[in-house]
Length: 306
Image (cartoon, rainbow, N blue to C red; front, side):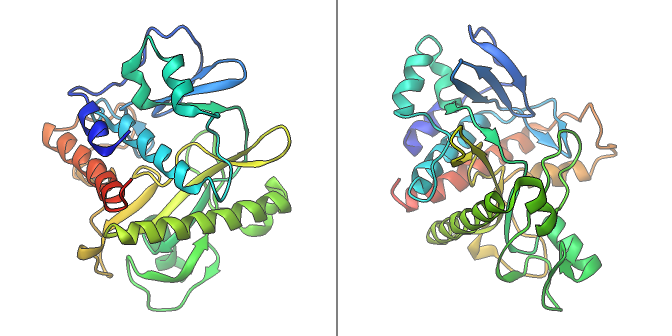
């Protein structure tokens, strides 16, 4: 889809649930619905929104479209570096599968069945979020030595690979290199680290050409029956990454972000225990969050003539 097609496809109301499909439903994530088609899987990204590990009552209209189309765009950009989970002739195969449900096509991906690598592959180019908190407490980035005197949002001397566990419940936790190699095997770990840093370098360059800073991101990988490593899930979306506008960047403070940080900031003003059920969002917060997702996609796609 082109950017104009994506923008035109955005619905007025958030699609929080998927109903009526004749496929075997095997799982629901915070955002995605998963269907087993035999040799492949159908992934549908809804418009659900989670914050602090709680799915909120309100979604962001079209968020699933924006995340899916951003990932499809990045899968095309990175396919020279690593295979990905998309089936061959993906777009045509997906349209044929969902010919009776065309409204779901922009939300969906048709993918190979892979065995997930049990690591979240996190790459950081700047100190932000949990990385900044850890540096304040320890002077390090999850055990990695850093220069003294860095500030909130400071650029790191070089991008760093800081993987986490993939928790089935609760929060993912940082894991050091020896433990990560013991968990997934040294060969797989080295491949994941190398390609994660390479994709991050590509993302950094393309973001810079779009007037954006890619502060950090996370990737997920899986292996096929032959043991070949594939990139999977989502890639360099505003949900899996921190994008900052370069013109507003100033170290020493939090940055404007093209992601759901706007929602988190609003929720932090409420007397809410960050447990289910979450609070409803004002119309203004929903609209401004959608605008942030859309702006990130527009800056990337249009400046790079996608």
